[in-house]
Amino acid sequence: MDREMRGEMDRMEVHHAFSVAEYHSSKRPIRRYRLEGGHLTMVPVGNAKYFSSVEQFFREAFLPEGYPDSVSDDYLTYQKWDTLQAFCSSITGTLATHAVLTGVGVGNDKATAAAATMTWLLKDGAGMIGRITFTWLQGSDLDCNAKKWRFIADIVNDGALFLELISPLFPALFLPILCAASVAKAIVGVAGGATRAALTQHQARRNNMADVSAKDGSQETLVNLSALLVGLILAPLITDNQMLVWLLFAVFTILHLFCNYQAVACVKMEMFNRRRLHLLLKHYFRTGEMLTPAKVNQQEPILTGIVRFLSYELGSELHKVITSRCSLSQLSCGREKLYLVNLLSRQHKVFISLHKDSKPIDQICACAQAEVLEFILTHWNKNTKGYHQMFDNCAPRLFSLMASSNHLDSIVEEELVEMSEKIIKQHLAVLTGKMECVGWITERNLLGPTDWRYEMNDSKHL
Image 1: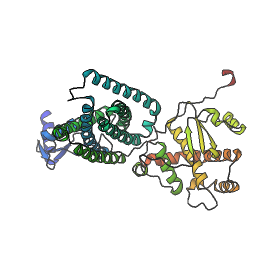
Image 2: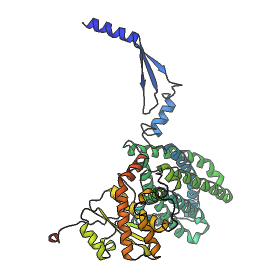
Image 3: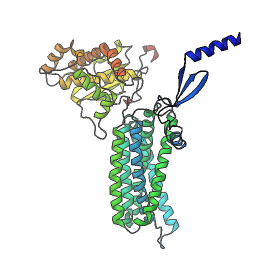
Image 4: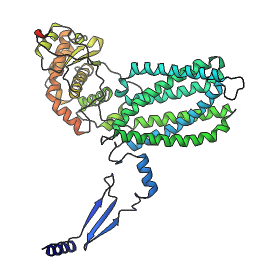
């Protein structure tokens, strides 16, 4: 029986030859095998240079496992610019270190080790205080605006290096200048480290954040090693040659900032922060077109903010939302509401209180309602043309309300809030469906809510 089965299999292999593709961490086949006549033969794919020892080493040492499928589409472009900026920063850092060592007395017979030690300790202490203070003031915003703070961190870093360079020129102010530079570097450490983590989370696509972060560290170490070799060549050249020092500092600082801007500008984040949500919905309300993350990220400003008619506070205290009897009755009738909205048009503010059971999609929904209110107040008048069909049902009433007065009273504001809520609820499924279809992530967001939440209870729980 076994002989008959083997014979049948041999006949099938002879008449039905087929090939097998083999992959290695990629969608592109690395090898192909052809099974014919009972023999397995390897067929090269292209030049098949993947398994050359040098290329394999660099892939495994410096690229995440599974590259390019395990990382975001913008990974390679970002890493190229990030590598160049790291090299430039290392060179300017070498110049600054030379100046600081000169300032503390290296090579000076009159300088003492005790004085240099005290200077160094005070410098480090100032940096520690600066690190704690900055983290306290700006910690939550580093996630929401990672690209902005990434670029700011590098601007501050160049400022710190500039202070270190000029410190030996002012012996009487050497310690204050050095402490100021240390504070600036502490800010760089917090902002740079936090935003690097946020960008790594964006790049990791296979729950491989640790691997992406480790390989990023390996890349940076290689760059710093290259810059170290260049620094060894520059060190004897810049001694007693201030003109060359400042020329090199100016050139590499300009290159550093340029590369940094290109790096953060190429990042295409798919999670909403307030800027990206505003740009997306403003365009959608006008045209009905849902922009992709790539297009919205191209429009997102890096340093400057977006000029808005209304700003909103997500996670407001309840007393900021419940400001009238009408809103109070809305609260008592809305036990199942996961957020409450209050419009104060004269203050150009929208306050949003969140229920303790609200989820990220509810936060997006609440912010979308605030965007509807801003669209109505800034674009709606008798000459309004071009708006999405989601406004069709309420358009006549909106024309009437907006034409009645230049200043809205609380009754009109509450009616606008009610209308905006109906618009969002009626079109929420379609809106979020279109967002997800073009690549936006709605399960998480970077909208930056506060920790204030409310919960509806019976009076007996008071």
